[in-house]
Length: 487
Image (spheres, rainbow, N blue to C red):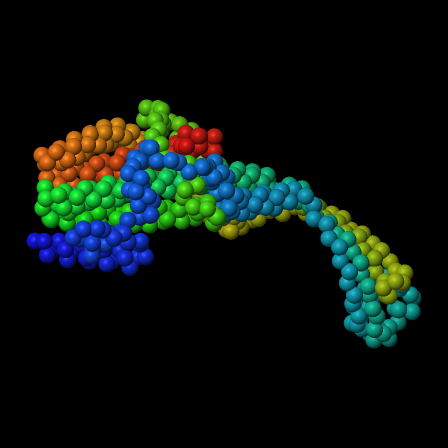
């Protein structure tokens, strides 16, 4: 049995040594064996003290949650995408409004040739037609002639059966919808930052718990080694304590990895790298939150969620698009006019003329219009179905978030009580072990239960905060003003 334990210890310590951890040699019969001790824990062991997670000194805050959210709203790609969508919808609105304005154009054209019809018309436009130009030779075989034409033209749709007005209304509603969608994107970014920030905080608490567990395991090993040397305990007690220490060291290393992973997730949520580490954050602490009844939370979501507002605006915009398509059945009246001057040379004299008029147009076979109206009605049906599905999904999300938050709040109470009981149980068993009344195995079992209860407590605190943020996101009321509730 002892040989199996020794072999297992050598495998663990050899593997941990490959990670570059400092090794502390032990005195006595087991001096040939080495135990990994984290630097901070070694200092605590030398001082003979071990601080609990709640008593551990908190690093000075460099990055608050408000600062992290502000950076995310400026740098997160989701916000840049929302800004681009808003700019696109704004441009679409401006394009639709252009339909109300006249179109004015300018052109400069030069032509040369001896085509009889062209030459005849050019001389008339240049006001240079002579009586000799009526000779058959001039009419049939004219000399080549150049024409420089400068013109200004205008066009304005005076009436289109309200088609342009409905297009403008549709574009305006789509613009408002994109603004509402941007608000929802902002809330989602805030939630991702809150979740990532809290994830780093709980990871830091787990590192503290792991460090405390290593410190406790180190002291237990030293105590068991002293008892073996004093002849009041067997060698297997020291070996078991050493195995327990190696396990706690592995957990400490894993906790540090989780902390760094959480930090990377926070940087991704913020959309930027940070020059400092997780120790710069404000510590995780237990909080309580006031929550309305489920029916009120659902009502708040249907009233406040920006994505639902966006869907409603899309339905209204599509209704205007249907009216715009149907307007093509009606008549149109267009106004037009132009002025031009024609010259044989670019800087020479010539003749000028103008034209103006109006045109009434009616589509007597509106097959294309019918197809466009049917298409827009199908889009309207899709928008209405999307709105209905979004409202149903919102109710589900609020219900799920509500019950998750309620469960998380109760789990905090249970975890707090469990941690207190496990701590007291460990204290009693340690005293009984010192008096030789219980075995080391019982102490190790109690130490493991106490460590798990501390981790469970901080996980419960973390879930409580994140689930409340998720509830506020589900109801559409998560904003920067509420960040004080999470820190």
